[in-house]
Image (cartoon, rainbow, N blue to C red):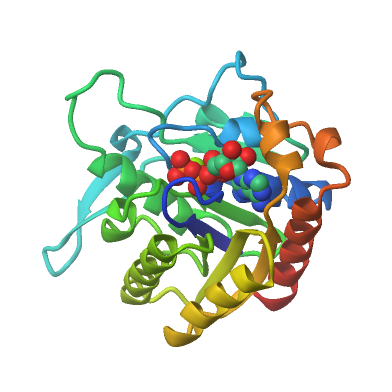
Length: 256
Ligand SMILES: Nc1ncnc2c1ncn2[C@@H]1O[C@H](COP(=O)(O)OP(=O)(O)OP(=O)(O)O)[C@@H](O)[C@H]1O
Ligand SMILES: [Mg+2]
């Protein structure tokens, strides 16, 4: 299963991504987690110490450009994915390997286009087997969707908060996801305070035929635990949000 997680800034993409990876990993499923945000922080929600070494960034140097018979230029990984994971990945939570696009070293040092293509090809190459999960935590902008970074995922999780601009943004992600021909495009309602919040999201998503597959409550234990830096599962043991994300993991395994 290959999943991309998108949504407007601050909706909870990285929190949900990290927790999903840890939950799936703890079930014995090998997980390849990719931090697609040039301002990376998936490592923290995967429990990595803020002082620990980060993965060696993925760059376009990992790509080989070749020409197809029709003359069209294409890109593929130069080395097998296992080698890329060994050189660039770090082991984080149980059964979880983290790769990251990394951050530009200096301001004004160029675009990330090649890096986006590298991520796309890593996902393309990742095993199709259902026991393996590849999860891409996207940056908030539509840029990566426009560049097709998520082209080869089979699930697009659109995280949405109960306010209009967030819902409207999800409709844009959904449209781009359709253009990329992603099979399963679904919404995950996050930071839901009450029945009215849930209804607002369900009503909006119904208008664009976007199924809401999970409703995660606004849960102060999550934001409190996040203040420490690295997210400690023990701090959110009893958390209703964690319970909802556990259920989301079950549902994804069953339905995809
Ligand atoms: N269900 C929840 N209840 C309470 N707080 C939450 C919940 N989900 C996420 N948060 C908090 O919201 C904040 C933003 O979360 P997160 O970094 O995961 O969002 P994001 O969408 O990845 O942001 P960005 O667009 O910057 O990448 C964090 O402080 C996190 O603890
Ligand atoms: Mg994030």
